Length: 376
Image (cartoon, rainbow, N blue to C red; front, side, top):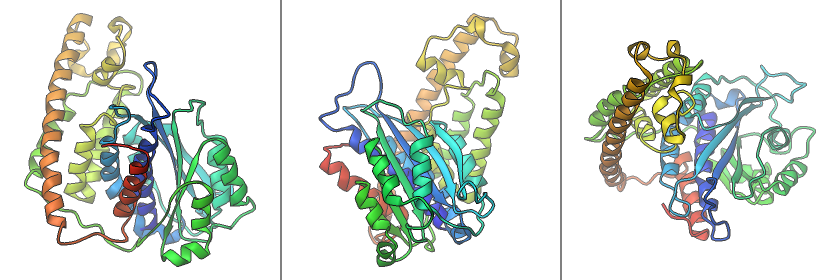
């Protein structure tokens, strides 16, 4: 369960990053967007089994919170990198550390990797995985980007040959904030130096009850959102060498979310109606929003069957039609989600969530956001 909480924390971290992007001393330029870069370092040792499902279930909740964040009136871009550490299936030479994915804005890829994680007992070297993430990931040179690491686990922060203080000092020199999430008792995390790591890294120290089950609130709007999601999927037009595989991956992650809980599928559908869910690399509708497409350069044998014998002009017209259709569907999902959020808030008034990953992260995010004059 720790592992799931860790993932949720990471997502929350992403939201926290958006807070910094709204700072008054960092005006947005007209040539490039602010980018939130978040590295998630997840402990996948054997004690993390219970948290994995929670992390997968809360992924879309956190991303949805992030989608409401605004920087100078606009939504920042988001890129996530994912590490696992502390798994005995990894090599001792690597420090039991594995980079699962470099920074990516492909949320389906992140979801796929989360569902692919398995646990096995091992040694958890926090300092080494932080050091690896700082040195190996492409953090870029844009001073306006928000750069954050979220590391989650339950063993002492001091293990391994790399001193966590040296690793975190190096992170700060590269403008990277370190946040820590201890899966267990607050004081135990302090004695294990997790709080010290967050303080040194200018980040937040959080603890969660990784054995607590997530309670999903069913609303009167869920069924309609699920129906709209199916219509939304029909607006995707795959293209390129990886188009078909990415299109199938999208469907698989819909299925994975639904298998966890139908409400998780609803939350994923809400994410798919937001700006953060961008598939310009394989979907013509999203690609057309980014740049002008030369349809004569597209290989028709890599398009859906219905478009393979169409002229370039007919394909372009079809893309425009699907773009308008998608926009209407996404707008309707967002409208329903506003009602859904109100309903959920009313249902939860009688039960205040405490010591859970989602609530801890969001509370920390809003606290920091207030200090940075961030709005959402």
